[in-house]
Image (cartoon, rainbow, N blue to C red; front, side, top):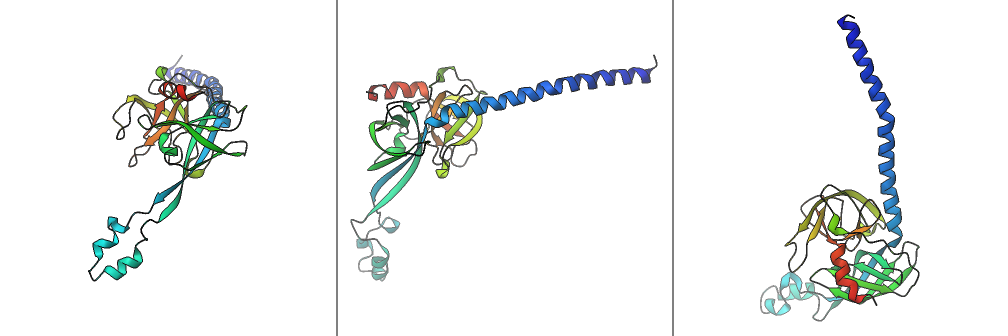
Length: 258
């Protein structure tokens, strides 16, 4: 057998091996895609959008009140520009949450509902219900909201202690008001500490895209189990978000479930 014939034979074997493996690779990719779809479908019905109404005092312009400019050439100008004392303004904030109990208990962030005079909870089935805070802890940035409804579909809760960097992660929520948005990434790190003033606990770091409005929504594993509650991002960074481990959240909210 000359060298030319040997090279052609080896090349033929190689091509046959590649072609035989290609269908298997395609099937594996399809199976993985279906795993993501199933995980999102399992949790999404339990994800809600929260709109919180607050009434806040309007701060003086530039941090100065009208007395600061009294007697100056600018007194008249700033008197017209500044809001009157005692003026209050209605603000509407938005966040996400996840139903963890069929009796209408919704887990979210403390900062989503803090100071809210009214909370509108929009369910995936199209209903909008009024919610009330039954427990809140600013140290862990966790809160529990309840709506007057029974038989709601609750999301299954996983085990955040078993997480390892590199595992897939799915974030579901309402970034910028876009409800039931699903983003995919990995667990970047676990046990992150010292994040945010006054916040306590070890955080899960993920590169699954988290944006304003995702706060309070679930971080989910590939089995369709909630492993964390999305809490904050690093503003200048891209793909650096943090979630509160679900095992920690279970301990905090357990006394509020009654």
